Amino acid sequence: MNSKKYFNEIAHQWDNMQRSFFSETVKDKAFSVAGVKKGKIAADIGAGSGFISGGLIGKGLKVIAVDQSEAMLGEMRKKFSGAEGIEYRLGEAEKLPIPDEAVDYAFANMYIHHVESPQKAIKEMVRILKPGGKVVITDMDEHQYKFLKEEQHDRWMGFKREDVRRWFEEAGLNNVIVDCIGESCCAQSSCGDEQASISMFVASGEK
Image (cartoon, rainbow, N blue to C red; front, side, top):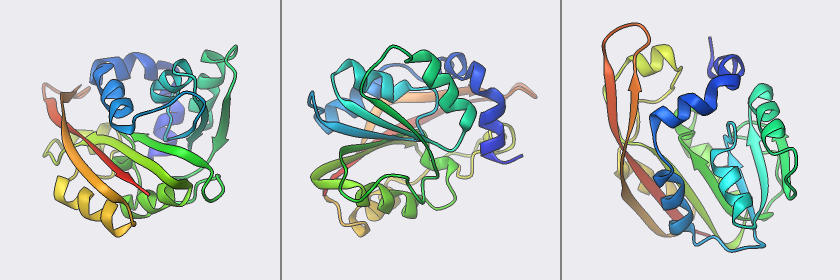
């Protein structure tokens, strides 16, 4: 099973699953680092069921939510059926369905460990940014919990922060910061007793 099929299958329960992985602190840290402002346009890449998108709408931003899973986007449409200022677009991280220089912020929360090429995904996020815009990625540090690849179809077992910094700089971003969120991602294996607790980072850079 690939990650697209996996997320299509678990979309209806993703909100509950996500709440067990990490808290609202992750969202708050991402928004603080980005310095989000009302009326601006943000892309939420790998939007899932709307963890980041919902927070952005609440802060008065317009949102383009992109996900590879039709089912996840369907869950978002139901959740935010009465909300204005949000667009839903089916697409892949390495080829975003967004024009050049279209958004002020590009967010990806717990997503790049699911993509084939994190470097390409970051370059795509930079492409869609307006000059002066910011990329903000929140994800897991490098770890050794193999059950996450087997059960949740992660492509990458987290990342070294120095690699993330280099990818941001190679993509042309300035003022790059890679810092600790101060929270861990926690997950329980569905097939055994193993439990993961993995530190998380926030990476940001300006175009």
